[in-house]
Image 1 (cartoon, rainbow, N blue to C red):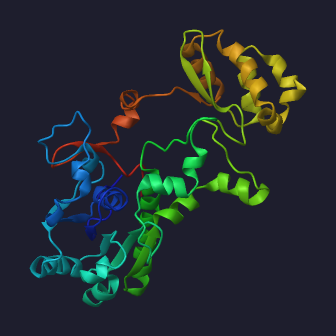
Image 2: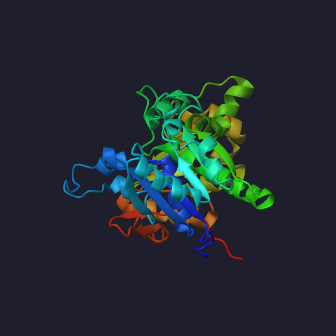
Image 3: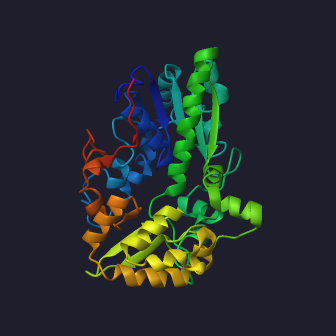
Length: 355
């Protein structure tokens, strides 16, 4: 894939933490010039200091910071100082896109709002991130958004406290929304020659990603409960089984054919004709009995043998990998980037294109 698709784009990033910087890195990976302006008065992006206990305390940059700041030029400025603010304004005046996540009212005080900057640069696409929408000042911390938008309530094991996703999921979802909006704005600007204002909230990005769980509520008033890795609509999907060699396999069976092939592989062909397990609705209704019976089949075989059989029959199955095991896979290795200012991160661009 051509990684210079946006070589003629200039982007100024006035965003910190994860969502905004992830968007900046996306464009940097595709060849854009991205200048990240950090607040010199406060020591820069707060994630510079978000270090694991094993990280070098003397290193000015954390692994977290490296995760979304690849390929950028870093400029430290205090925008409350007129001279330094003018440097930023000059850069924005010659830019295509501005990525920002100011608190409500802050941009106006610093003359970094769209109303002011569009007069300096009518072609500017101003992409703004908020927590709950324009004009709202509530803090936008990911765990709070996971709680407020239903993710925390649904996530975890039954009869256990809620569990948050181990990545800042809402930030990542909002970053995707903002990227999509910017790409649409670029297409529109090509037609009109004018820029515009884009606003994406973490809250609405999270709601948009509720997908089938939201539909289950909106259509049949089902409130999703904590189910661990299991699925409310399909089974055995997300169910984890022990094998003869004391290993684990996670299944993702979603069709009648996959279920029939699973039964044959486990030498449990009689389950295909059991009235309790006819069609998906009954798999879910009688989930506990089904999982118990399937488990007896898994215990007859070692994991490598079963995985080979599942692969051959195209029955969806996998193993639960830790981070080391993830990056032992060849396609994961292809996703690693080296930062020019030290450290490594994974690509935000996961697609391939050929023209």
